[in-house]
Amino acid sequence: MKKVKIIGFSLFIIPILISIGFKNHDNSFKNLEIKIDSLRVKYNIPAIAYGIIRTDSVLVEHVTGFRNIETKEKASPNDLF
Image (cartoon, rainbow, N blue to C red; front, top):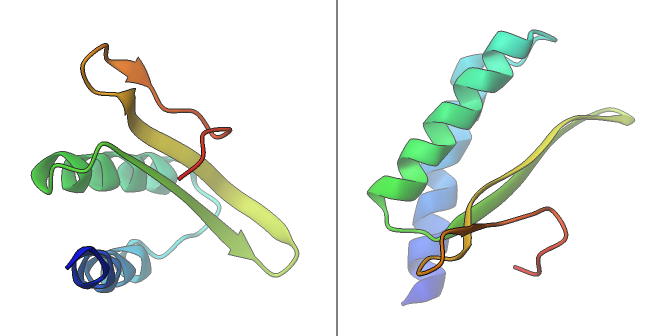
């Protein structure tokens, strides 16, 4: 059942990423961060890590959410997902 949820969630995120239009504008990336975090909360996902790569460079890499929900310890890029 988890695989179905993850696939469904991934299929939901892809159109959002495309619709934002990723130019090299910090504002677009901030909007992405806000949208992904709101989806994380809506679907009760503890943490999400994501990145955007274009050709040979990393445009964005970010983690949002909590490593431990009870203690509100924030997730980091070094956490294992």
